[in-house]
Every structure is written in structure tokens, then in C-alpha cells.
Image (cartoon, rainbow, N blue to C red):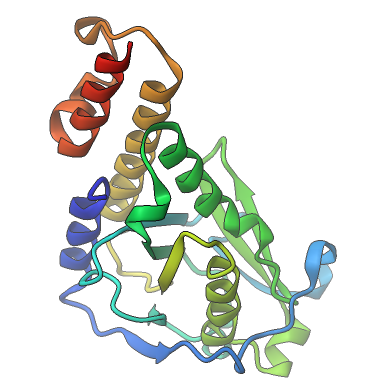
Length: 242
């Protein structure tokens, strides 16, 4: 499965001039999971990642690949400040790269459902004092951090380890690399463009799986099919089956 590999390679190119902090996944160094009751009220908040009070970048995406060279191990990377080093709202981005088992993930509708399930993992990620605020309509993923969690030692590494653990519950996922970004000078618009491409590829897979109409000339997603070789193959197989 190579659907998103070009996006991942461009992401790495975007990051190559920066120095990132690195930590290998440790299942014993996770942060407590608050479950569905993970609320941080305004008066209990230390700051927001992707602040809504002065709209800052707030991006989040999970990307699947079957290329082991792109995700060699379970790990967390951080570009910017650790949570204990922040004292005000900051821009924010989270990218989770998931190495998947190509044999298990399937094709067509099965592939789309598997990718969708991987994306939904973020809704089951609830570190105590790390309140995710996700708006699919506005394409925003921000985080509200509590004062108490900072005092207790919450970090991107510990929260990231919990997120990796959640991803690994999925039988399709073999390894996970989380990349957290809050550096003010980072090129968030370029990252946003890559995320938009990822979402458009997913939308195109869904379109191919769900529709029996194969009039490429009138399809608004034709450009994506033309650019991504594996989508062409999915499209051809669907035409052959119709």
C-alpha cells in the first residue's frame, strides 16, 4: 500500500532542516487514561495547543503506510517546546504515521474502512489533563492542557506513548511514529497542504468504493486518481468488477 507514501516523504523533507527531540516508545512510561470524562475547564487550564482565544494553527492527522523504511520503530518526535516549557498558547500539529500490515488491510471498501478506523483512534485518546478538541468540520485539532497535569509531569513523550498504545490495539497497525509540533516558526501552511492531500486521497478511495458511476470525465476527484498510482489500480479493479 503506497497511497500516502509521497505525502510522508514530503513531510520528512519539510522536517529535515529542523532538530527534533526523540524518544523511543516505552509502554511503562504512559500517562493515565482519563477515559471519556477528560474535561479541562477554562479556570483549570494552563494553556492551549492550537489556542482558540487567538486562533492558532491546530492540525492533526493519522497516515497509514506499508513501507517499513518510513516507520522503523515505535517512537515520539517533538519539534518545539516540551509541555513543561510552555507558559502560553502555542500553535500545534500532531502527525501519527502508522505502519500497517499490507496483507491484512485489504483493498477497496476494506481498505477504506481500515484507514477510517485508524483515523478514529484519536477519539479514543484521552490522557488525563490533555483534552483533545477535534472539529472535523473546521479541520482543527487542538488540545487544552490542565495546570494540575503540568505539575504532575505530563509530557508529549508520556502522552505520545499512550497514543501509540491506542494505535497498537488495532490489528492492522504494526508500528507508530508520533510527531508533535509547536514551534512558532514552523511552516504550518505547508503541513496543512499535505494533510489536505491525505484527506482528499481518503475521500477518493471512499468514492470509488461506494459509487458504481465510473464517468471519469465528470468526476471532481479525477485529478487525485491521475496522481496516485494505487488509486488508479483500485479504480480499474472496480470498473472490471462492475
